[in-house]
Image (cartoon, rainbow, N blue to C red):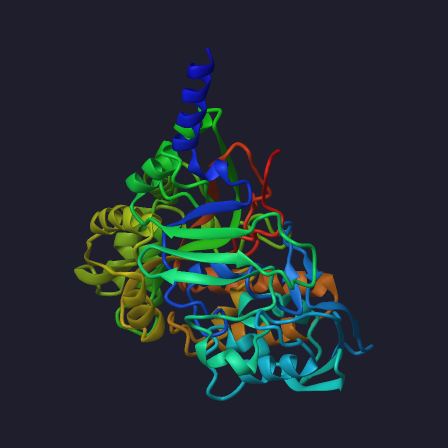
Length: 489
């Protein structure tokens, strides 16, 4: 009996190595981040590693989507909404042991809004007029006009606090103030973070966290089943979720994300500069067919760039319902009934699977596509950076990011002064009712202009070991916040 028991224990240790160490975790990720600087890169995979773990902002997004204090313990707003005074937490240090204070806030925000800034969300900071230190733990931010959304904007990964002394190495060896510090990065394989003993707040239960990069859905399934991965927060093979749901060793997490998945169009490139052509493409798309075929039923149809779980969302799917005959007539009217368009696909499974379905639907109305499968770095440079594309499929996972349609240099190349005017009014509005009205107007404008073909809101489908607690079920931010993650005792 004793021998059999010992063999069973030995087998369990082999079959489930991660459970042998109750203070470590191995998470799977589809995409490897191109660098580890959330203030200088657009890839969501950066935030999925560093947000709330390695870097922190003055404020942060909580699991329920609310804005909470972070490095600023509180703040006051002037009566006209144009001046914010942030009180910083005392005793905060960076991972190199140096103190965090008001000068770091000034450096961070001045760097983010500088003319040569490479911040992917530079517009978040355009409304700032001055940043000044009242004392080492008090910062005053004066705005060009009132902005009720400033605490939300400062909660983005693009607004985390950085240290000037280490800024030269931030992309490969980042130094932050979070509960975890950078350990190692074996490119092509994994990134490891280790607990920071000098952390100012509640110490995490985990001592080490390793992010392993597994882009192939079949390999992801095998890694979890073998015990090589403890959790895959954004699991790339939804077709196998039923197997995990039936297995008591695992827990399936199904929630919402901020990810509007779109068939993006280059609005400045003929013939996509013609509204009739963009509208034809939108009517050629069968959203449910894509959700079923590419996502195995996980996803919510959308008709504009806005999350359906938001109280300000309006359902505009009727503006672009599946209607192939209408699509054909619009193309004929535009003199564009024989088209060939380039379709650039990043490596995410939803894009690769969805791209094949989209290509077939467009072919049915007379539009041929030349598909190019791209690696993530290539997509970021060619499509996102240089707008060298016709069509692409991507999920925009940043929260409340409809304002990107007001950027004249954004890769959609959409230019509508009326939309920018609504965004300017929104920035200045503080009353919730007024902001809600303006957000609905913005949704209607881009739906009417058929800027992109709006496909579905990306569901958050994750798999984790049943004993693992504290992972986010929903994703109000592209993040794998490990601050509350622990193994059940």
